[in-house]
Length: 426
Image (cartoon, rainbow, N blue to C red):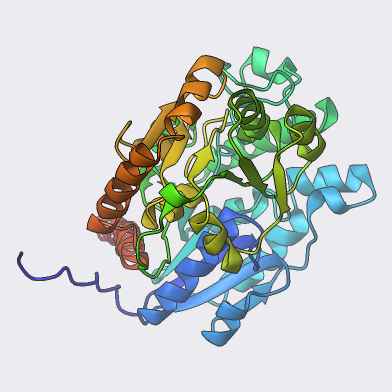
């Protein structure tokens, strides 16, 4: 078997300044930012967490991580639409405050890692970081580095978008989840972001959360920089395999919006008489019940309680219509031996061996969707898939240690690149 892998040693005297719109979990990006901050701190790295909107997650406080606030609320909560638009496009005040924060750190030993900036801070904080010649890392949890609405998706047609981002056809497409006015603000932000970041002397490094997302993002991001893949961590204690073959309901977990495929699932389950439950909240709540009056609506479930709900399901259904870059809940289901039915349009499809630990579908194909759910009606099939899923997941789990090792390697690359550049100038 050989010796177990050892953790990657961080560079000495390294400071990592993590930047996120939020310091509490309200989505996957903030969750990863907080988990990585705590993990890096445990590795002996000096971590500072800069954020806009509180509260501050208890894990950051307990770890003794310095949290610095840039006091700006989420853009679209502002009552003045002009003020909201200006903040979203270019938050000059945030850039000024962040410049003062950066002045406290040695740029030769500091990495600035952005996880989230579109909700409160705007691209101005990235631009000032590059302008001050700090090594800058940007994790692409979505597609906002290329696409104005961040999803490469037309929310009005409920279909993935095939237009080139920021092309003339893209600019006039009414594709935004809110309105055309919001689209125009996002286009302005995208334009300013690309121009300012492309002109900066210091090029950033981009982290993609899956090879699936990297393949898409690297082909569309026009800003010069190096690209890496660092998978999101999954913090789970190994339990005994769940017994999904004894459960009856399939489960959807996530925000209830059409692009997540929740309505497609409700219709498919109704057509074949499969019991289905939905854990989440969102504007598609009523549409789900109209499509399937027998659907069980569980509401939003805290992450601490979600695992128990997943373990009581027959299978997890992940039928997204958009190109989801990750799919954390799929990892969590497979870890407990819960089979996953995943859309081929998602990064989660790469986790599935079709017919092995789950099934692959096109959520828009009714025949294929119905066939997949019908397959899950067999206890024998579900039991076989469950055992395969459990065994396969724990053979190489996406642990926090692996995530941190890969992160530190990206940081080291950034610092080594700086050293070689500065040596070349001498």
